[in-house]
Image (cartoon, rainbow, N blue to C red):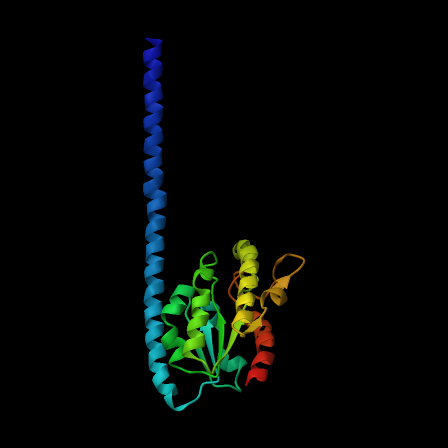
Length: 234
C-alpha cells in the first residue's frame, strides 16, 4: 500500500513537471518567438523601404560625382554626414539592423550603381558570429563593380554595457578585416582601439547611448579617425 501511494506521488510529481514545462514554453518561449518574428518583420520592412530610397537617390545623383558613400548598419544610418563632412558630397547607405548578408544583397544599389570616389564600410555588429562567412565576398564585388573607387574598411567598434560581451569576438574579427584589407589593397581604419577605455575594457563613457550606438561625442571620435584618410584619398 505504501509503495502504491509512493508511486502515485512520483507520477503526480512527473505530471506536475511536465505541466510546468508546458506552462513555461507557452508563457515564456512562445512570446519571445513572436517578439523575435515581429522584430525581424520590422527590420525587413525598414530594409526594403531604405533600398527604395537609395534607388531614388541614385537617380538624383546621376549628374553628380559622389565623393564618399558610407555603407553599414545603424551606426552608419545615424551618422550625420553633412554635419561631419560638409566639404564632400556624401551618400549615407546605412540601414539599421543590417548584416553583412543584407549589405551584400543590396550592394549594387547602395554602392556600385552610385560609383562614388570612395566607399567607407562598417558592417558586422548585427552578425558577429557569421559576418566573416561573406565579408570577403562583399570585397570581391566591390573590386569588380567599382574598380576605380577607393575602399576604406572600418573595424568593428569597442562596446560597453550589455554589448561589451561582444568585444572579444569583435577584436578577433577585426584581425581578419585588417588582413583582408591588406589582401585587396584597401584602406583599414582601427576604430576599436581609440574607442576602448583601457581601465574598464569597454567603450569610453559618453561615447554611446547604450553601449553600442554613438552619441555626438562618439561620432566626433570616429570622424577624427576617418577624416585624415579621406583627405588623403580625395
